Image (cartoon, rainbow, N blue to C red; front, side):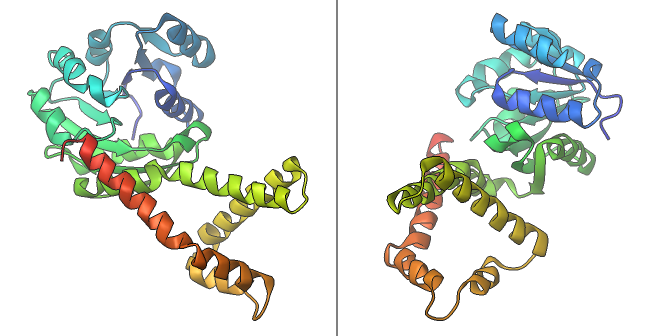
Length: 270
């Protein structure tokens, strides 16, 4: 799907690096990747670490690329898109990972019949374990979605959603790693409180979460059914679950996703 395509990154930060790493690991040749990055030290790093072609010229990278990946901060969208407009014609695919920036905004800024796919990966992309949602703009084709999917499958799993669901994606999987880290930290703290060494408690907490997630993914069973298999009548687990319910654990998680979703809408000016 990506064979023969030149992929140009506008911005060479951590998420761009994660995608580049995944592309190269997935068989894309270094000659097919070019990165525009303003920071000299960052350019040097990307060049030495991944043998990627680097430049400080956004416009030149956009001209070279068949697929232009917008990996810049959302607050830079207006000025960067305006500068790129002469180089991005209707024969190019634009893939945006800018949080909160709609496909309509990009299409309006790039007036040459541009095809846009918007993506929301999360930070585990850095270890090729991302959850990414993608959605098409008005002119994007099914082939464009397939190309975007081919890019992000190199760094994890991909789902397609309507664009109106992107704020929900941001609240759940975009912000979700922070919720999981907090949960793991709390499990570790609880182990320390009950006498375990910190490194032992953290190792047990991490593997417990990893193993449980693999059980859900590999068995295909609903989490509630798997929970029931751990929960014996009158046992330790049901006692712990009662404490979680008393503390409104599930409701608090849902509230966190709701709050992040609302904030995503606010940042997008909705």
